[in-house]
Each structure stands twice: as structure tokens, then as C-alpha cells.
Image (cartoon, one colour):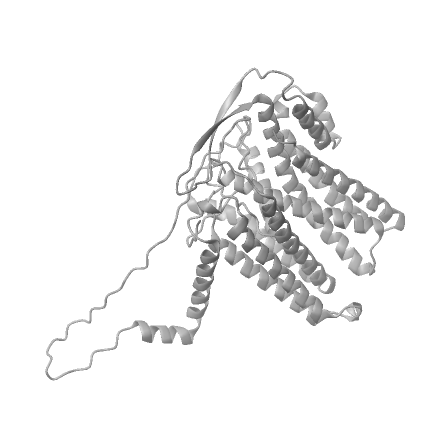
Length: 474
């Protein structure tokens, strides 16, 4: 049984960030900066409350007689208690005989076109640890994108305005960045394990390194771009952020309404329709927060029983990164146009180029991960680079076909030449053209059921993949 090190890392980042934020808010209060103090506390307490609610929901503490645990969650000490409980369970393994065990079947990665199924016994202690790992994987994502990401953006904005970095603010920024990158990494690993739940997934250290570098460059660049833009166009940053957020928040609901599917009722038996709606809104809220700063490895699909779609859509990934790169470049260009003498201590063209190159480096590490380091790349039905290239070619073709000149050229090429009258031919029949329909390579991935070893039905609570009419699936 593996040491629950991921739980320890999650709790350590949560505790360190909360402590640093509380200290920094006290310094803001001493300096009389009530606005910065309020925002710092807001981005600390709101995600902390959501983390407590998530742990309580996954462990079903409301339906169990555990008043002390509920009290500790109210005091915002729930993650620390859960971490101690997980290590106590790990330490007790082997000392007490298991009253019963369950049998799980996992497929190994295919070799030579064949995949063997392996049976393994899972004891009660290991099942409890599985629940703790799953709970902290989800809370790490919540803490990262609903707390650490806005906190990092706020503190960097304050540093730009004050042209200085204090020790407390710098410490909080570093911890927040690590928390965001770790949350994105956990989201990637969680997506892999849910999409390929029938297989025994072994994530190698090189895969962790690629994801870490990919997410670090992507998220850091995005935060810096938003801060630079907001420093010169304060009134326009709110519409930009709200537009991004509303698009990703409403998109899963629009797809759900278009599918005419029944309302999901299997999230939790004890929840009413109103409670289920609140949970789904929180889920799409988290999904929008993730996509605000980086590509979400898992996508929400409300008309699926597990609220997720386990297919990998290369087309959607290509569109996201193309649009995000264009948006970052546009925001940097506006910053460069409207910048003031406030930025005279830096060389703006070089900074602009460095940020675009850093974002491109993040995309490069993403390509390396999916092409060479993904633990389930043997199950891909097509090459990742080939899929993205085909999608890019399709987008370029669609953009070129929109121009009037290209439409006239395309019409001239596609339409057959009108037959000229010939004296020796009396046949005025219609000209027959052979048209070959392009094949539909829509590869539908097999939907696997998520095992419910621990009695929780929250495996898809923060995961999903949105299907599209044009799909390049793997």
C-alpha cells in the first residue's frame, strides 16, 4: 500500500497558504489598506469553506453520528483531522486482520495488441485510504482555482501598483503558485484515472515533471497577462473576466438543454432537486474557474450519468489553446498600447515577447506529455499531434472559406464548367459529377463505469468532457 503522500502535500499547501494569507491580511490592516485586507481574507475563507463542505459531502458525515468531526470542520480544521486519520489508517495496516476483502479487476496496458486482466484483493483499510485520496484530490483542485489563483492575481496586482514585493506578500505568492500548479496536476492525474478506470494506470515521474512544467508556464503566463492588462485598463478587466467565466459556466448547461436529457437525479440520494441543482452549479462554477486560468483536463457533461465524458477531444483542445493564445496576445497588445511611464523600469517589447514564448513553451510540454509521457497513450486511437494538426488544418480551411474571394474561387473550382454547344452532339442532358463523401472518423470512446468501492458516488463530481459536433477523439 502506497504512503498517502499526496494527502500530506495537499494539507501542507492548504495550511501554509491560509497561514500566510492571515499574516498578510494583518499587515494590510496595520497599514490601513482595508480593501486589500478584505480581498485577501475573501480569497482565503471562501475556498476554505468550500473545502470543508467537500470533505463533509464525500465522507457523508451528515448522515453519520460524528459531531466532533463536524465541529472541527466548522472551525476550518477538517483537512488536518482527515490527514491525521489517513495516516492512522495507513499505520494500522497489517496489524489488524481484515474482516473482509473485496476483489477488483483491472486490465493491464495492452502489449502486442492484447491486454490481460488482473485480480487484486482490496482490504477495508485500503478502501478507506482510497476515499481519502479521492477527497483530497478534489479539494486540491477547489483550493487551487477558487482560492489560490485569484489570490495570486490579487497579490501580483498589488506588487505592480506598489512597485515592490514584501516578504509576506512574496511568500504568499510563491505558495499560491505552487498550490495552483499542484491542483492542476492533480486534475490531470484524476482525469486519467477516471477515464481509464478499467486499466491499471501507472504514472511515471517523467509524466509528473512534464505536467508540472506545462502547468507552471501556462498558469504563470496567464496570471501575468491578466495583471498587466488590469493595471492599465482597470474598467475593462471586469468585462473580460466575466465574459470568460460566463462562457465556460453556461456552456455545459447549454449542451445539457440541447440534449433534452432528464435532470440528473443520481448524484446523492439524500439531496432534493434544489440541492442537486446547487451541487451542479458549484460544479460548473469550479469548471469555469479552472478554464479561466488553464485548460481543464476533465470537462463537465451534465447529461452523462457520471457527469463526465471519458473521450479525449483533440479538436476542443486545439480550439481552446488557439483562442487563448490569441486572447493573451490581444491583451498584451492593448497593454503595450495604453501603458504609461509607470513601466519605464522594464523593456515592454521584450516582456511581451517573453510572455508569448513562455506560453508557447507550456504548450510544447503539453504536446510532449500527450505524445510520449501519457501513461495510457497506447489506448489512443490516433496520434495526438496528428489529431491536433488535422484540427488546425480544418480551422484554417474554415477561416479561408469565409472570405468572399475564397468563396468565389472555391465556387469556380468546385462547379463543373458549363458545357459548350457542339454541332455534332445533340445530347443536352445534365452534367453528372461524382462526389465522394468524406468519411466520418468519429471515434466514440467506450464509457467505463467508475467503481464504487467506498460507497461514494462523487467520482465524476468535478470531472467531465464536453462532446462536440466536430470531434477528434482519441
